[in-house]
Length: 70
Image (cartoon, rainbow, N blue to C red; front, side):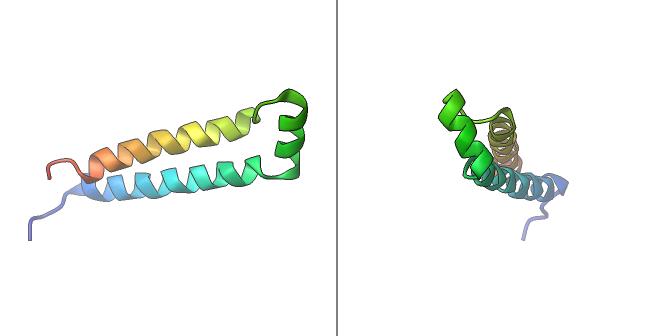
């Protein structure tokens, strides 16, 4: 079994954080405040967008670190 370095562990952590942020953003978007904001402004709140973007960035970095050198 080949030794997996710290990059693999960091990749898994970033992947988990990314998934968590996306789920949190989805939950925020479905809240009453998120629905009201979408009804009046027509777009999700800045907080929801930041959670989605942060989750996507962490997820991509996590995947890159996890599957690097394979």
